[in-house]
Length: 348
Image (cartoon, rainbow, N blue to C red; front, side, top):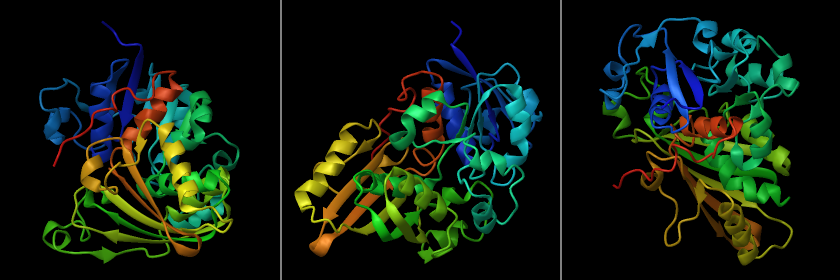
């Protein structure tokens, strides 16, 4: 029986592409019809992604964006930053819906994009005119349902935004917020580098881009949109000996006299409405509990003098990447946003 919708993936040979493919192959209503890549052209998907061995007859195709998008209902982009933006005009002309996993359309200010991504944006009007909806369902669900183009959030951004969103929505997030985020090596992509080389990564902790990570303006923009006031994120990322997963610790100061029970209630109410954000009942969030899944875990610990510590964990490739893109795709197509995303992962 044919499925209701057809999807293509462009940039399917990386880790994010692998997760897009995996989720689409098990999707009950969306058929993965085409996978484009400049690498491994003609090779079966399982030759690059061993977990897909024998699961599909599709091969990587060396085709243009227009060819990939032909007759598709939706196109999902797993392309690098600064590449995606140059492909977008061709995709927009195709008429297909687009979900972009890169950072090229998340920010609304071209000067900020240049500062953090190191290049002039080729289509600055598309940043400021509302062409793209920011694909965080927990904030923009209704807008995503109506969107034709979605900019899917970054992995650190997702993890930190979900930690702070209840405070922002309540108007309690203001001024400086300090965050330390620990991440696995898959966040650096499939190409090996000094930072992902196993003999060093497996025995090491180190920081990189302290107070200057490209997700900082994305987080500030999103949380200010949600109701934060003059927010400034002071973020230090840490490279950890994990292959996947993010654990973030955020410190905020609530100044309006809310007590600990009221703060906890904000989080309980928020998570009760969200299918993929949960508060563990008898423990704090942990990476192993969400690894391989589209779930995020959040824990809140109010302290003295308005200080609140918030802990959050995601799988950077799924809720922080491809899974969230599929969640937005489902909303765009009028489907249940949970489709192909509810598996609980493994333990340990």
